[in-house]
Image 1 (cartoon, one colour):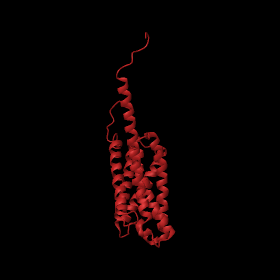
Image 2 (cartoon, rainbow, N blue to C red; image 1 turned 90 degrees about the horizontal axis):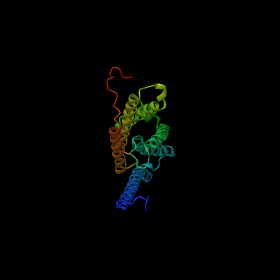
Image 3 (tube, helix red, strand yellow; image 1 turned 135 degrees about the vertical axis):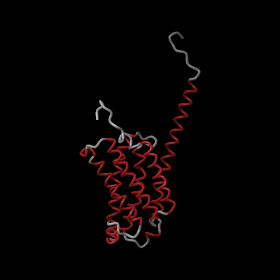
Length: 231
């Protein structure tokens, strides 16, 4: 009819491609979130049935589970910060990243306080780096690095650092947290089980590597200021 555009013969093909892309994207998102949930929950399930919890006090059990939960939350942090989770925009992911960071701090606080109540001498040795076990050293290093990263995030406006410098410092401390936590979990003979904690640590370090590659926090740090350009 006059005045009406003739329908293109390619329209059905375009609609089919759009629907296919939508289905693939949806299936990919479901797969990623499902696998992530399995990796995060598996250590908790293994820990719940661990023989190491037999005849232990309630405080020790709570402290142990707080450590397991902290490692699972830590796994989310690089994924949220770099927008690697499908279906979650980066802006939303970074807001969630702040709240999960608070939850991570609380979990670590419960973990440390619970272990202090259970055995103060062991915690004093760990905090003063005089403990004979390597996992204690890595755990304490990760804890102080987490506090440093949290302080950087909380005092960002007051510090008035250049965005590039702040990002480099925050990512550096976060990397120390992830590597130290992974070493702490792998070396300690605890409730999580060898396979489950190894899986979490591998995914955590992989997510950290991808995030550092995508964020590239060193960009702009070594760039020379050209004459005539604002500093």
